[in-house]
Length: 197
Image (spheres, rainbow, N blue to C red):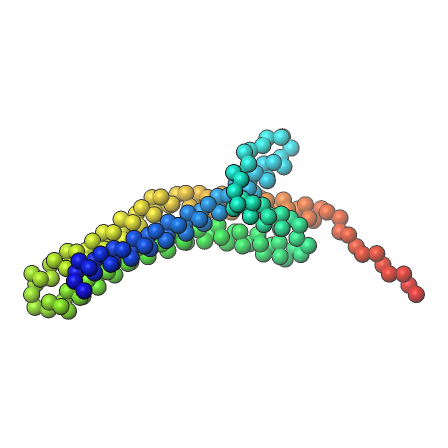
């Protein structure tokens, strides 16, 4: 494979990883934002002052979140409800780690392809230094692409991910503490005793 073909293939792979990262991070951020908004609205809606915030926009994802929240509220088994709430918390916490993973992967792919390009150049042209410069010059563009696309991800999602993950965690904690307090205050129904024979 010539150096131009190698560089184009490497750049295409880096672009594919970037596109995948954009899709997955956008999807996860949207879920965390809607969950934070939904639970935040549920808390504000219960306030006695009557102040109401705007409801989250209606969508299939919002309806899915509503069903999950209602499932937790109606759960007969407290352990299952706590597991679901913990799942929400973990999903919000993983958002920042996911961003760090994709940014790091893009940087490492760029560097890897540059080193592989250099290695291939050395293997193909072991003695001629001038023949090394053209393939190496092309291979360096993979590092540039990896670093540039990782910067795009960082600037696009860096602060948004941190803010929404923290907001979501706080709203989950507030909503869950109110849910547990309401469950603790609710009278426990006992089954009637069987008559003695």
